[in-house]
Amino acid sequence: MRSHPVHRPVHHRTTTVGGHRIAYREAGPADAPVLLLLHGFPSSSHMFRDLLPLLADRYRLIAPDHLGFGRSDAPAAADFPYSFDRLAEITGEFTERLGLKEYALYIQDYGAPIGLRLALAHPDRVTAIITQNGNAYEEGLGADAWAPVLALIAERTPGTEAPVRAISGPDGIRWQYLTGVPDPTLVSPDAYEHDTALMARPGQPEIQLDLIADYGSNFALYPAFQEYFRTSRVPLLAVWGGGDEIFVPEGALAFRRDLPDAEIHLLPTGHFALETHAAQIAALVRDFLGRAATADGREARHPHD
Image (cartoon, rainbow, N blue to C red):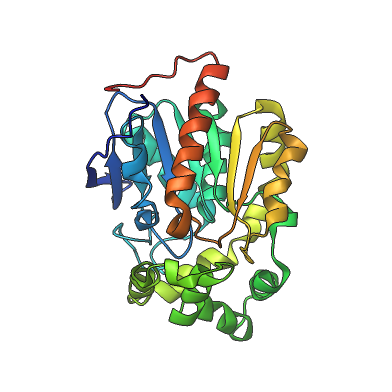
């Protein structure tokens, strides 16, 4: 008889990286294979709250809040150069601080360009990638959603900033959570209200504008990310909200161009797929990581089964 996954507690911890407090959630046995989960905008490790207990019997799960997000420090934009390069550097230092020598990546939205920078820097450390609406291809950019962002990237003025500021407001955040979800009543308002409250803190508009204005640096790295896929042949699973209008399904399908064996699942939900499909995604991740570890020649260690 097949046993059911054991639900394990989730710890809420902090550490210091480069003088900044970084908050993170951790679950699972300390000696289990590591899954590093990197959240997107405008969320935090809070987005993984339902997933972590479902995988913590088999994996050591670590989900940091990026600097400027969640419970991590948020130095003023005037005092810290918010960019994706810097967030990736801090995340890399975070993994060193925790002694993570090898890990699978779970990337969503902003977590994708941050995590893929880690993979470029240390490809030997990344055992597999799970992407949940974490984009690496121009095909994945929804035209309407990206129009104001591309305008800001092209020229930062009060006129181009205004519509992007709205993305971080209550209506913009709610839109990100509910668009593409067939039954929006399945999405807990707690999720988007949590993010809305954090984005309303003093200094957040400037932080988020700096990061969004820097998003062009990610486009510039797309060819390098794709070359990494081709050369590493890293096992990749896409669990993608098919109704997402920010990172559209074509972005998920594009992974097969460079990774023909990529496993792609388009789920009937939106940008924040875990809000409605956490159990299904957990099952897909568990199956995928088990096979990826075996195929790579590593023993799939399952402590405390």
